[in-house]
Image (tube, rainbow, N blue to C red; front, side, top):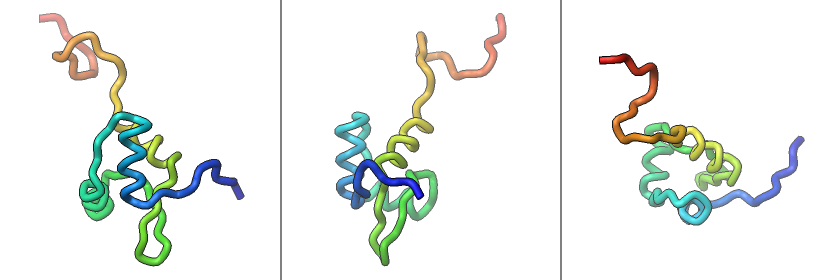
Length: 82
């Protein structure tokens, strides 16, 4: 069994954590919507209350980030000569 280094966060705290730690703004309403439709960070529930592990929020952010770009026209994949 692994020990958590940080406490679980309620949805409002998770929203604030994303902003403070990653500079990413996701409102509590957006996190709630993503919890319903999918595509959001992993969470656990205690009764009806969702809790987010900071490690899960960090991992979710990493899945959203792309690699470095040198141009706004780069879309990934192989570029073909014109």
